[in-house]
Image (cartoon, rainbow, N blue to C red; front, side):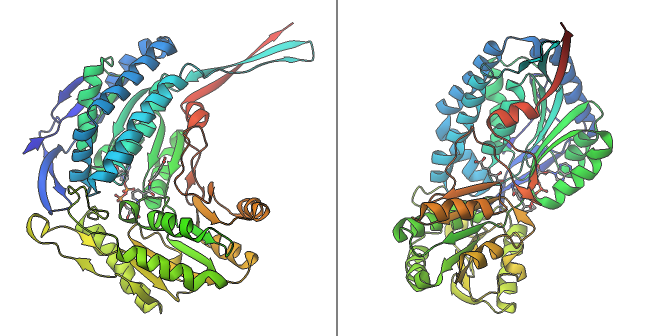
Length: 480
Ligand SMILES: NC(=O)C1=CN([C@@H]2O[C@H](COP(=O)(O)OP(=O)(O)OC[C@H]3O[C@@H](n4cnc5c(N)ncnc54)[C@H](O)[C@@H]3O)[C@@H](O)[C@H]2O)C=CC1
Ligand SMILES: O=C(O)/C=C/C=C(\O)C(=O)O
């Protein structure tokens, strides 16, 4: 079985205490690799390597930094089949999804920020003829990137690429649940010729590696994606140390379907926004509100689509639904199905664990699940489930649906289905949501600010926002 290693100072090294943890394949429930169970000593070595690499990296011309990032993008593209197979094995997602979404996006993250490094500049202005002010954006220094298990390489690289482009050196920690493609990335960084220490990858648990990174005095900023509770804990630790924070947290995203929408598009995209990656994307639209005149038609078409979704071995290119990431997570999601029954929901589809034969007999599979008749403010409609469970709710007015859509502690993403342009703008403006898609879902442009309001996070990623996050402005005033 493969034994993964840390990537510190340009070398693949074992954890200093020599301990490893098994990582399980969600489709089988069996271990398929061992990852370093690193600790504060490994984090200290990685931070030291990053500090030593910093002076040369931050002063290296942006064009050269960018060229290295573009080279990494090319290597990810070259190895996309191998990386997709590894991602699918490690996470349980259908290999087709990994091949068409996760891995291409990881390559795009490096290509996008590799070129962005050369377009990032700062401002100058005259102060009414008496002074000239200019702003220099300095790289922050050594930064930490901590990512979750749901989109492993996609989100890992979404943080690392802008940090490197901005001239920072990075210590990164992938989720201990899905470490495999981060390890493969470290091999590609060696091949690309990334200088030692510029990027360091330390594997292990959040309690040991994540915590040590957040507490390390030389780490100037933390870019984190994951659960809201973990984000809260990180903020509590980092705030008194005056570290800069970017937190991308949970969501309970509303999907607003107005009666004048294109029904076919609304249904097919809502199937994706409900069940892509088994509903384990923070942007999934788990609360579907449908204007009453369209309710029955939408429901019938949606349920037909749900019935056609194939739950199967993620390695089979025909599978549309893979395994949930772990037994513990499957049990959490099934707990919400039980709660939906208790709260008075009417089950329209799914609701059960799926037992597959053969190689996948021990896997964590579940049917795509749909409920109706749940009050908009019940727990199932307020709490993040992060699995293949959605609710359908009819609404009678724009004001009512806006109130329901805004009625959770989260504010990450929303979708509006309508052909009325004025309504689209009006409703988008009224939603407390960092991202609003109109007649679309997960339509991504890497230049746009990405992030949530309320308990969905702090700060924005993407484009210039990410480059600003990883730099510190310095104002210089010259008296004329
Ligand atoms: N983007 C999102 O919205 C995500 C949301 N979740 C939600 O969070 C729930 C819990 O999932 P988990 O895997 O436990 O996510 P998590 O938030 O614990 O893990 C995310 C990352 O944070 C690290 N981490 C954990 N404790 C840390 C600490 N004290 N300091 C620094 N880093 C730490 C983990 O090792 C991992 O790399 C899920 O059921 C889901 O509801 C999970 C993953 C992604
Ligand atoms: O940047 C994107 O396109 C998607 C981000 C998704 C997450 O942050 C998530 O699911 O955790």
